[in-house]
Length: 277
Image 1 (spheres, rainbow, N blue to C red):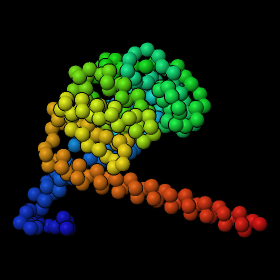
Image 2 (cartoon, rainbow, N blue to C red):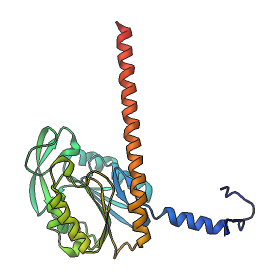
Image 3 (tube, one colour):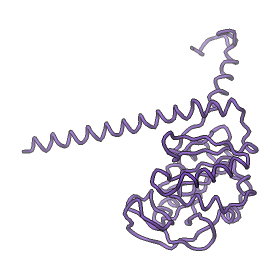
Image 4 (cartoon, helix red, strand yellow):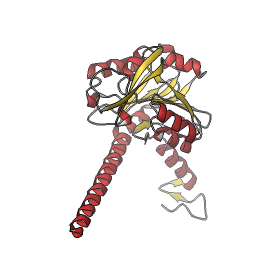
């Protein structure tokens, strides 16, 4: 459809141009989007919103949220090197700490793949290259320290510690979260399905709608607080039946594209080495 018409009231299928624009805008705003492999609903984010990223890592999620929504962002990261780098290079507020099931200190195992660093004991998914003693906060203490009355998006990617942190969090704190983006680590054998089911059941009992963003595991989960982020049954149906599949196709296509590029690069290196001989 060409909207560059002289007459703004020109009709298409019985609707005016203005009506079509309003309809398309409202329909597209129904859909969840993925930012750094985590699903969020953009409709409920404004410049005055607050976004907290637990397990900020290199800041991919934080920086994209800042660029899109220009809101207050807080990153919590246990790796002192990454936290210092983020504090120097990001406009977000950075807190060097970890979030767990209580307050105190925790031993933070830094792994070769820094995305797998964790406070949990047990077999490491990636080789451990160092350990740090880091301040640990519960979610309740984090809210108090940052003076947060409400968090519009709380993203949790803390390598299995999300189960204990959510279990120890009072209902009153959870009800102050608009959207909760949680990466459960069942695919790595860290978190059991029963722990995920129990956590999700509690959140649903508090009025959260659960939308899974992945098909074969529980790495991408969005819990939307119906009291703070009201959505209709049509919204939920659209996101569960269409948006998550569309995001999944985009995610798979990106993987295929990166795999294809790596294969071509490897083939090119092989040809160059062959010519050298």
